[in-house]
Image (cartoon, rainbow, N blue to C red; front, side):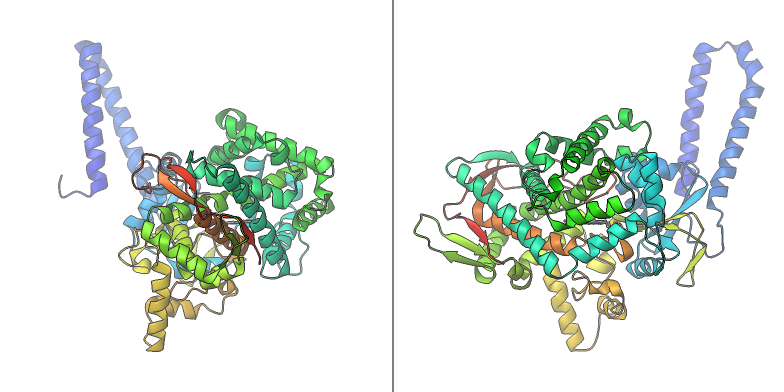
Length: 584
Ligand code: HEM
């Protein structure tokens, strides 16, 4: 048995186990005469089932085309991989990818279809470029219907002209996509929104410092941070009369919705199987419907991007009531990843006192001016534009937190049979997934410490790349980087990081579905982290060192992963933690 392949060994041992269980049942419950009568029938059933199993097992491994990527067969033919994903979340496919590092792409057979998993950045780039044949858009209406609960009439509006080629009429999703991209791309509107966001966060942090100046409190770090992000985002996007401000209990509904997304996506009687998330979403949608029907989105301080989104939705035939569901999704995009990323950055800093001191000095030297206003604490003027350029260590910690925290899968539907890069066949109606978690954990890309958090990794990568390009002997990373520099996606600031393959950093996705909020989120998170670092000290609740838990990777990684265990800390306002004012 030792010489048999592991999968066969596991079948044989399973078979032995079931046989002995059946035998012991038979010996206690069935008489010898009955057993003799049943024996031929049982033998036939076992033989038929075994034969069926072997046939299905082999059938799932048959390639649909000689160039189809290697097939990873499931122990339970066709269903095994789906069961694995349902039971173990994103960790399941990531585990397969890490076990098969020699395969840049592989096939997972599922009922009536295939999932092609891409684990190589060069191939990921090719997938992103083949956007005519491999597109996310056809998958969107089914996802949004399940997650956001649009009615049939609005579902039909969403499906219209969903994936237009240049020059063709644009449906509502393409139209909103274009609006959000133009608004959040580098330029004045981005600067204005970033400033509004940081000023609102500073207002909240200053209020907190004032209220808790002599009053340290023990909090769950994630819940503490996401409360700041949730109320600030709702304020700077939707104005002071936003639903979360008028009904604070909706914040709980928001996180219920977030934590049940996977169950909502399954779409099986969601009001029962995903009850909390379903009720949370409906409570939010109802409150946003009232907000829109009251015309509160026309308040002066509401961000122009919101008014323009509503205008476009109405132009495409949406009612105000149903537009509320679209706004729930935009609020979600604006809050969830930002909150969780801030949590990881803050945690990694406060768990490393030396690094924290270094970052405080970096901030004071490069992006913060202290003003003595005559009070007992200095006022800090924070230049958020300078954070990205003058605080390289903070920037590196931010990127590393995203690399380690994101196992995101970029997903595409294969619209037509495709031979990618002339070598990899993808069958029509199958699904392609770029496995961010595998790419982020790849030692071939990130070096032997890929599974560890290295706060200065991105500084070292840049230095290595600069020194090797100076001696004109490029590393693989550099070569990939420059060979792809003509891609439009290479304009992204994360892709400009020297030494990092353009498609190896996957926290913001890539290609046509690349996160349009990435520049804004970078400004917002760096500024918010700076405010926390300047204003408070954090200690472990127990008084010892703050420990960084593992991430919870047993869920569908729809956003930056949360920690496996709660991190409880004592928050103490610093003696020199004066008011923060965002100046630019
Ligand atoms: C650290 C913070 C953030 C992370 C890690 C992040 C990540 C992502 C990812 C992975 C996607 C999907 C990409 C894909 O499917 O390939 C996405 C989409 C999106 N993000 Fe972000 N995001 C962040 C912050 C934000 C913020 C602050 C906003 C808005 C203010 C935003 C707006 C959006 C929108 C609208 C989409 C959908 C784009 C589309 O379908 O056209 N994101 N984001």
